[in-house]
Image 1 (cartoon, helix red, strand yellow):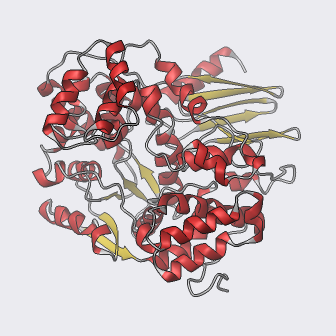
Image 2 (tube, rainbow, N blue to C red; image 1 turned 60 degrees about the vertical axis):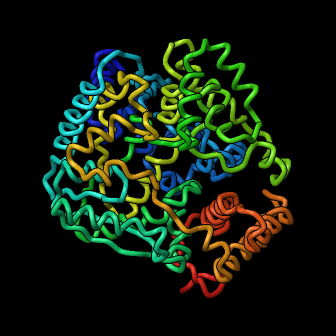
Length: 530
């Protein structure tokens, strides 16, 4: 491939609105690129002399030269992160092209390079300047993402992110989903917001029966196991919107760009603890870290908040999900699946990129999430669940100009006065009622705790845990004990159980049943309906 052609492709990828990966093949020459943020998946495999790439792994499984084999190194990290956390997927020999990277393929040799990376710096701009920049960039990006030959709708939850998008976009249709259990039904608040903004809103509620019936199909569409419970409502929300539209907007990315997660360091609402911690943060780095070491493992009021804000990000933060710690994962896994990259090795790949950069510990956490959690979980499930219904999802917050605005925000405006996304919420408040712009993050709440203590659904999971194939991966006795102790209310092991149940359901779909699209499961027994 000539240098001129290669530069053209790299420039095209770098200037895109981050909606699509691109690729080109000509005889033995090839080029491919993934969008800057990882909005769309990009898989590749080079086995048996055949080079393949696709946005869905299942399309590769049909190739006569492809040999389907489980990657044993993928399981242990998954149990901690809840999503496929390493570059090689659960299918041995199939890897992910990382966000912001491109490849050249010449005469059987593949070279991968980075063309884009999110940049975080510190500035001294005022809160007023910051809020104005955020709002201006959001308005520009939403307008750009509305350009289409067809109607563009919007997802709408009770959270500030999708609410901000919908309020600015003013779509003809918005869509919300909830659960029949009242405390998990945020569609009520979404509907109230739509009414206040004079937007049309369509909403539905789902229940456990429907979730379990479709769960094998959800895993089939995902290609790999992802135990984020929000995969379930997102699947049904996408189906709801697809009845009317082909394109929708959504709010993914705002939490990573503008610090919307409580795990970034909001673990108390006690003002004394917050003030004390802020004072301690002004101490020299070595002293802060020494205090963090003293606090670590203690259980006094505010200890978790202090540790999260005083310790180096590399020591206290692995991203937005931690299901099993590594010792727990090894205790339930069979020996053949314990050999895998450690959690620290995985996250250090991102932390190494900002080591010595001088940015705050909070921005280091954001950087990690933008390269681990966001492309590996948030954007992956968003793409897979919408495309399951031929629905194009557009994410206006993941715009390179908006990233520039977020990257230069002073750290003090990211989290302040007990609020995550502090400056972002101020910008959103220009378009939303105060109750919507300052509502606490719920993140698609799913009643799996209730389901796993319901006899019907407990029996479905129990039947799965008893299957003969389970013993090749796990200590079956330990799994059944975990399930029973949770069912009786002795422990709260719902996320661990759901993570294992997700993997086993996925394995059943792709290996026991050879990757055929499953029929709807029955919630009356453990057999599939015909």
